[in-house]
Image 1 (tube, rainbow, N blue to C red):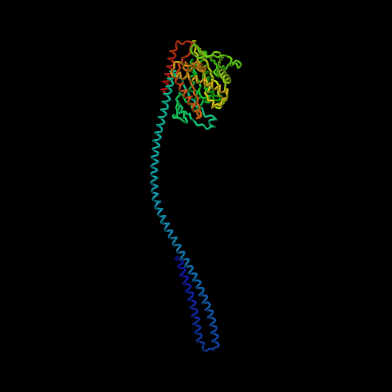
Image 2: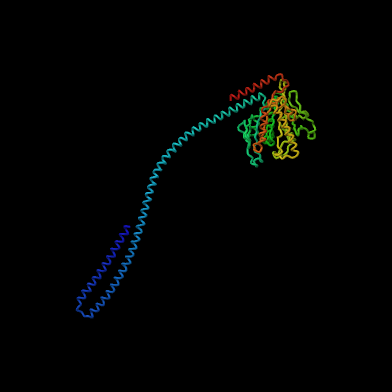
Amino acid sequence: KEQQESYIKEYEKAIEAKWAKRVAILEGQLKNASTSQENNESESAAAIAAKTHEFEEERKIMQMKMDKLQADAQREHKMLETLTKDSKEQNRLLKKEISDLAAKNEKLAAKVTMAEGASKHVDKLREEVKRAKEMKKILEGRVKQCQEQVDLTRETYVEEREKRIRYHNILEDMKGKIRVYCRIRPLSGSEKKRKDSISATPSDKYTISVVKDTGRDREKTFSYDEVYGPSSTQQQVYANTSHLIQSAYDGYNVCIFAYGQTGTGKTYTMYGSDENPGVAPRAIQSLYKLVEKGRQTGKVEVSCYMVELYKAKLQDLLCDEKNRGKNKLKVTKDRRGIVEVRGAEIKLAPKEKDLFAIMQQGNENRKVSSTLMNAGSSRSHLILSVLIKKQGKKGKATFGKLSLVDLAGCERASKTGATAEQMKEAQSINQSLSALGNVIAALSSGSKHVPYRSHVLTNLMSDSLGGNAKTLMFVNVSPSGYNTDETINALNYATRVKMVKNSADKNSESNSKALEERDEEIARLKAEIKALKSK
């Protein structure tokens, strides 16, 4: 602005000086002309007239120049006025911009002040965060200590609980209680396709929980000697079964049987596959290890028979196909109370491979068919009885029996989609299992009368349920909510079986030392309890 005002003043001064100079020149010319006129008055009138005319012409020229100078001055004056106006407008805009900048400056100053205050607050918050982190670290350490204590307490509780159950099981074995293991199979392909919910899950090693969709008691729990989840392996299942093979070899009557709804994996548990053998193949392997060891100090003879109960009729699975069904088989008991099947072909099995071949032959002859619940549904009850006769150096003989029973599954026609023939088979299976349930109910309630003779199946298993056998039951169940009712029924059934007591005695030629041997067994079990406590 100051530069513009200075420029305008200088421009005005220059114009005034220019005009003053030109006026001075004109005035000098006029003065010279006047002087010349006075000097030449004496000249002739003609000369004067000529001079006057010349002067007049010159005056006109000068007047024209003067007019032009005035026009130029006016034009330059207008330009100066316009420039002055523009300068004032620029000055106004500059003042406004300066005012705006001042306002912004005030706002920025206010923000700076606020930022300085916020910075102090942030520093304070940082200090608080730092203290909070330190406190968090201390608390995390305390939580970790507490969690370690909780884990230790939980582990101690689980160990103590397992020991208590283990001791309880040993005492129950001493009392002759039947052991019950529960196994939950994985969801099948059809169940996954239906997107079935999972209702049965293992709560721990000894408890299974079943959740119902409706009803007052939506969740039920059942406790058994062992509970195996869907991820359990065949080896894990057999690991807690192998001790019974030692008992059979030592001269006891041992029975291992599988019960459950059709399609729950009973046959898989008992026999498995070539890649994953079940209880029966593993038991045979364990037995022959004992047999080979026993043959180093004495004589051991192994034989077996294999029958199926199909439509309430016993059939020999080891006889020739042309004679199958013709031989009349009869269930009896020997003088020791051990069940025998008279008329069944008993085959010697000197080596492990011989017994495997016999077992394979029997399984191939067994009745199976496909249903909606199971592609290879067993339509009969299968009993493989392995007989072990052991002769010691002193001439004393013991007779052991290992019965491996794969019961056919109970089923509902509405779920299996059974044909007419399969319906008859299912009715026969359900009748036999119902008779078995009546026997178990009588035994568990302490009834004086036990209806063993009500059915061939119950007669076959009379020495295993309430008899003189060491018995292990597998109850196989489905995890699917589609089968919840059947699962609960099977678990209730197994709970009643667990209440049954047997009286297992070693079978020998001379029973005069029976009490002594029982005392030895009790002493052995007490030693095992002591050893477990020391661990």
